[in-house]
Image (cartoon, rainbow, N blue to C red; front, side, top):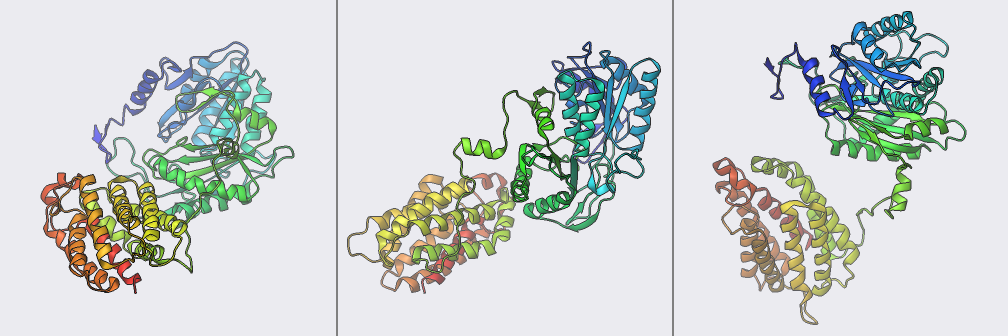
Length: 586
């Protein structure tokens, strides 16, 4: 047994048997092992008079293929060793176990080994009087030119099958479930394949069971566009992409390839954003947001979109985008119910994302903060703070990662954006009126806490809101003096201390807030701008001095001496904010 980099020990010689047995144990209500075979069949088969849909391929791609066995989808799956086709014998035995007397449809990705072994199994079944049909999946646009209509597919030349096989299997399974005969099931599966295109991108390779090194790699800081699920070469290598850039690449490579939408289809397309094994669901949803926008801009309507793992490659990082252009019948079959270990579709739940969004009363877009040429003082001050903190976002994340999760910079920038937008909407003027400024800060504090989240968001939200609360209570005719601001900052410090339970000296933002407050109070006779900038300098030095402290509060406290030698992220961001505000005061 070898321990792989993910920390799991695998016996490569028994891996296929081990995981299949575990799958059958976990989902005994849905499927069962075919005795003496590396294959599974659904509990619902064999069913007399029903076409059996048999799929298959190598291990390492779960939920393809065994995870898609169940009523309404595949009837059986034959499983090969890692990244290898199942043998003809395994396919034959699996198909025999699923055959209900109405014939067998075999469907699988276009790879040479699969083509040969499924072909041999089909010959053997035919010799025994079992009628078969085959539909190869050829959806990967990066792997070659499209197949020529009427020309037999050549696995050495034509496109390989990747995540689009889910659409083909789903359509075939639904057609068989409703009672279509073998010819019809095969024709519909072939139509689904002809209407499906996939393009993918990878950020890292994968490590096989029992191996200590990756099977293939992607150079750090790059993205491989079009790489196959076994590491087959793609179209080109590019730098690391943002989520939006990646979504644009996926859509840009698919749109020219999509078949013309049929009349009566309403421009509907089935959409699958597939994770290759390591990419997190939250990251995929960010990508899908832009994919959805781009498809709609192209006049297409995503129908029952799916985001998740359908065809993986062990721990490979990356995603692929599959699109199937729908006619009315394909839409009905794709929408039909099914129940498998990896995918369930409930009856009576249909419609595209816009239908659901409209029914729920959710607006298509949320308002975003934008720059304004006439910002009043509080808004201008927070905008300056946002600009400076955003410029230092990476450093704040680095400091936070010493003893936390590294998201402080991201969270504070996100919160300040929301604070600026809220302040811009709430600050009515006139400039210099403390009560007007107070109402704006109250709104900004609530917005920051909501958008930023986490402990830092709550504390910064309280800091702004409590400052605003003091200003709101200012008497008629008062102005924003240094003394009034010093009083407000003092109230805000007390609120933050009570909320977080921290004290000065415990290596938190209070270690910058307290000296800032004290210096501001010391200069109450000076103009606000002069006093504020002097206090900001003191806060900056105090924030840097937190490197000499050992954290004693919050998550960082568990790190003990490991936190020594690095400035506190919260104190540092506070110093940046008050510095930027001071500069905005003129």
